[in-house]
View 1 (cartoon, rainbow, N blue to C red):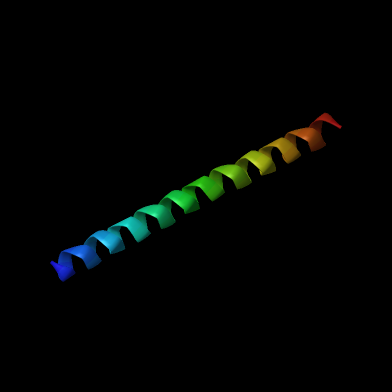
View 2 (tube, rainbow, N blue to C red):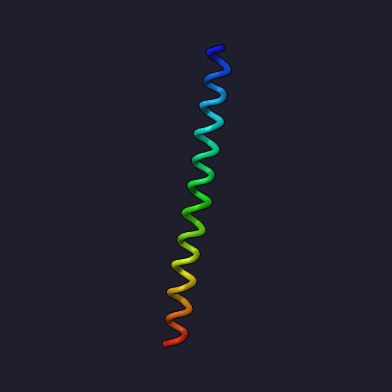
Length: 42
């Protein structure tokens, strides 16, 4: 029982970590792209 709980917890931590990393990459790309486009427009 204890082993299963640790496994589930580890899975959730990994899932949230990957999700956060993906989300951060999307935000950085969005900001970078809008900044890049604004530089070209000006």
